[in-house]
Image (cartoon, rainbow, N blue to C red):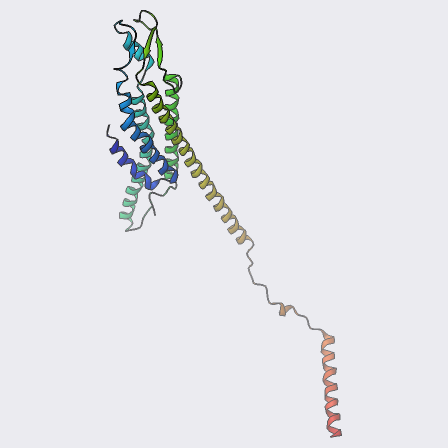
Length: 271
């Protein structure tokens, strides 16, 4: 399978992703796809050829191999990687749909745009992005559960017992390089668990950011409504208009003026 083509296709999702999404994509291609292509395929390449049972009964080895390995780890991980990376294409398809819709609107309305930024996670694109995260985490969880149920845990025993027909009795079967295969299997399981954790962190981040924006918008609307309801129609007049004149103050001022005049007359007569 051409994994480089898938990587080039999904690398365009980076510009629409958050920081958690970019970390998730890096983890998928560095710790899962590269390990799968470079090392895991070579380790599991001899699983059928080097599977040995201590019997010469025709067909017994094939039946025991099918019983112990109902599905190959390599094919199961390949399906897992395909299912996990495909939901990111939903976001790219939604953005392309917005861009096409914006171009049609621009042609009809002479240069005005329907979307200021088609890649902005608002409205339906926000829900598409959140749904893609749910699908990615759900597929990883489902495949980890399938691997656990098929192989009864995340372990590869060095010796397996098989008593299925046409085997004449209970035979011992041996897996080639079980320790190395167990290490790679645990590595793939841990990397899948980390990717699930990153998906949940991104979901919490998106939902928390959306809730904080809604709360802030509601508070701003409440402030604006309160200001409109309590807005003063007329400005209060200055305090000087409310100052009342004291009649005793005017009489005292008149008496003071009289005494000043008398003093001035007395001064002039003496001179």
